[in-house]
Length: 209
Image (cartoon, rainbow, N blue to C red; front, side, top):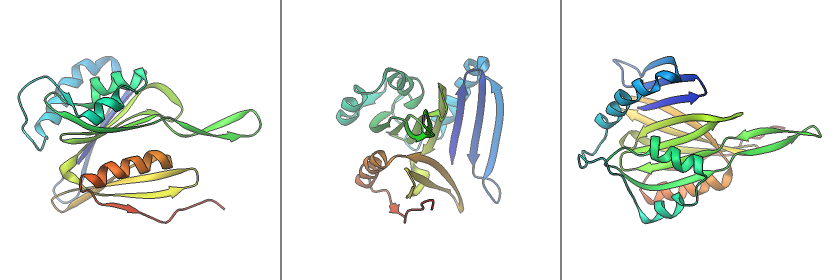
């Protein structure tokens, strides 16, 4: 259904949500990121095996014209992260949206993080989210969602940001993946997904009193 990989300093966490016997099954394991070079090849093989399209057996990735133009404007960290984690060999990067992190003032001299730096990708087979931890700029949280599992997306405004819920389904089992986006990034992502035939529902906003 989807996979999450967290790589922050020496802390690593792998979560796989998959179809189970009667309900979605969750496999999770913590690890030291020093061992990532040993874990990454089998994880990459699992992602390759779960692809909906076989594609060519080549190591080269390609970019659509729109993706190439957007890629050239990315911050260096995210352009590197996209190439290392975002697109599998033999896939095409179809489109992307980058959202810089946002903050709100807190007291007189402080500010509070609301949304993290986040890069959303559409590849041949996956919707991928590359993001930072909300209060930690070192490392990555990477999510891979097979495009053929996506039932629809719900967008609900919540105070200063939007909560995006990606609904996924395998067989008769469903799960959800959530992330926070500011309004501009959510609307950009909405446009790209609707163009590709995905169902997008805008829900009424929920705001603190």
